[in-house]
Image (cartoon, rainbow, N blue to C red; front, side):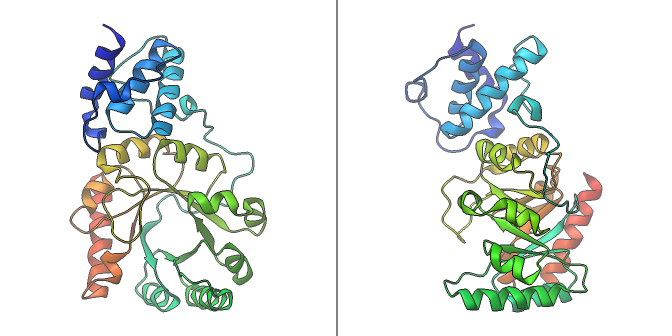
Length: 301
């Protein structure tokens, strides 16, 4: 069986991982170099719609898996951390957070944080958008005050300095912010760190920093922010969760009450919501329904 036939076989076996329009073979068969296992996995990953940096990451892992096991298995999608060059422990990790972060509410201001704390939401994130530094500090301080003495864990999106100054539980950073923020300083301040990821390459890069948790998304289409990558879908989420099972995981992006059970079946310990909470007609009822659904789905999983 030649390289193309093997790649087509893998793409068929793992069709649940496909997103986007099926590409033509001629569009994805360029620059195939390296071992046969690497070439086959790279071509298969491209056929499944993975972005090039993710396809390269998968191909490298499949090659490592082949060397480790002594044979190439088209059914065995790589899910071992070591095959991706990842250690399951970090020499200087960020402080730990619960493996099961539960319902995770992403909120626009401190008032919303206070409402969620009052409702007993286990994990909350302040995603306050402003270029006014003083306004940011006021909002972060108000959110930290609202969470003090409660069981809710508060993460601050992006504004790491304000989070340090206010003594927040943790910080959440996107990929671009991760590159610019002084991670060592955040760790030294004792804050937990959550990092966003949108595919294999970003997951691997984020995990190398020893974060407290890793966010996986966007699972489904979302209109809340312009995404550089297409929605990942449930098939990929399952594989991501298997690979990164040594970290607390948060699924995010377009998830609602209807899709929540299927998302929980992936094995993630937390699901983040924005509009399902902030745009709900009855916020208290929505939170109660989401928490009940998560608890029921976790038991069944």
